[in-house]
Image (cartoon, rainbow, N blue to C red; front, side, top):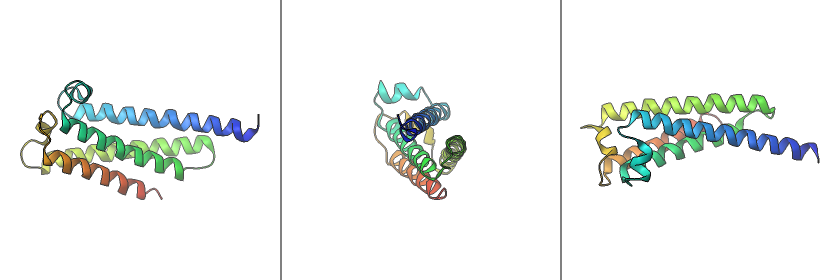
Length: 141
């Protein structure tokens, strides 16, 4: 086997595992800052606002992680550290944005998550999360 194939496989698997961990951590954090058990709200009760916020947060984090991987060092361990740091920074920014949305949106934004009807506030919040992720990713370039 060539060194390129071995190193490429090791790098791919390493970045994939790191990305998966960051995305799972993002879901866990989102679950902690929203009411109810998020996985049940989305996958058992099929609540559209919970799904919209979850999708937006995961897409946003995916954009950040992909950009972090693409712009990271060619040295595997350095690239993994850079990706982890920028991924965790992205998660922190997402939490701050969610707190700001709770403060700035009239009424209780958190109550939208458990509402069985898709609400415009949840859609707007979802778009804001994706835009924040895209801006965050652009800052890495």
